[in-house]
Amino acid sequence: QVQVVESGGGLVQAGGSLRLSCTASGLTMDDYAMGWFRQAPGKEREGVSCITWSGIRTYYSDSAKGRFSFSRDNTQIYLQMNNLKPEDTAVYYCAARRGGRCYTPLKGDEYNYWGQGTQVTVST
Image 1: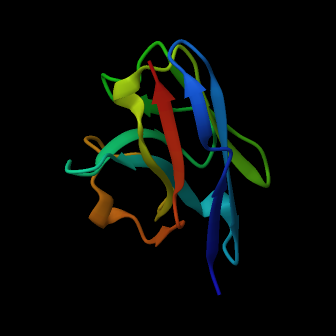
Image 2: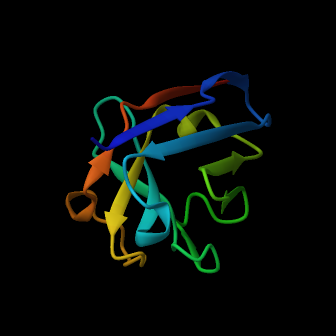
């Protein structure tokens, strides 16, 4: 059984940083591209970042470029978020996509497995 679990969310002041982590069990992570999505209240889900199975190629949405960085090791993936802004407030989801490649723009319905989400709140 595949299980995806995020952690690391919380409350932070604007300008601060958070690092989100994601673990995936029951699948071979090398066979999957991993993505981060977020959804704010009343808004559509937004693709934030994707990293390929090799960890070499990454994609960032315009809102994340220059502030977020994505990395992975054999067991976890990480989203380092710096210079956070109130508009980054959302539930962040980690997701796995078969095939190991990132296709842009990120489309949530192309991802096969999802975590339960972790809340990120950025205060002014």
